[in-house]
Image (cartoon, rainbow, N blue to C red; front, side, top):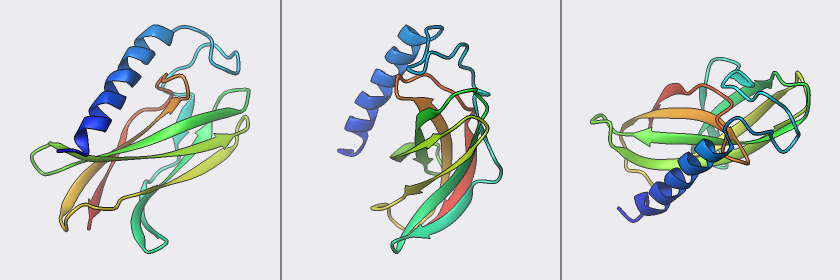
Length: 136
């Protein structure tokens, strides 16, 4: 339960920020930012990073400027309960691909559904959410 409190606070902050900055210019001055600004190059993949399980996500920057984004991985159990989240950052130039590795540590053995999505450093959603099953 202690793991969820910081995530809940962060999620509320992101939602508030998204509602405040939606429609405003990004840090790079680009308009409009949409959920198609960063698109996932399918598929999401399970991987191992320094011995820890991880999720590999590669995105394409569809804007005409460099973008630094925060990529979230939110893991849920079979009941849909959010148990864990992980983040990573990726920066790409216009039309370029960028890959992020989201480490998953500290969860018990089991099957989880992970949702992966990207937001700007201002909290604006710039990708659609994609899912992958993660078995630990």
